[in-house]
Length: 192
Image (cartoon, rainbow, N blue to C red; front, side, top):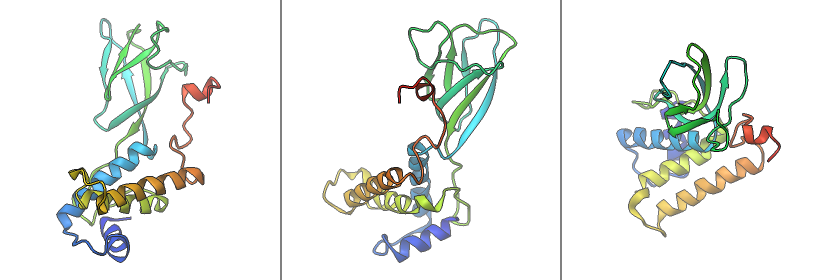
């Protein structure tokens, strides 16, 4: 779907009272798309990290929102942020990992939740499923009505509540799960 498709849906429905200027709409689409990518694991990427001697901190790609799992080259899963495991991989920031005991010359496979590419015009494609169109439109409404203004009773608050409700409905009906099927180490150990 393109930005123009989203504009058509918006003007025919939940945002028909708002004057949609293209530059403001592009910005709102980008913000809404990032929020949806944070809430749902829509894009999972992998980065290989070559460990080096005396280096414990490694930089990840710019599009990294959150590290999901880390494997060594023997496909062994590392615990993340486990202070009781001497071989844990720590996420010291959203795009950096710290390896407790690096093995020079070996690779790590870092699986991470990725942010979406930003659009620059309404002709650009936004890669989200149509299932998420309603929450996207409501988050756009939240942004365009001045979402950070602190107004708790106006249209901005209504759109934020509608966004939350539509995301919860999508999760409750199993249309998209927040983890999007990626097995986490917590699930693998039977804690969920």
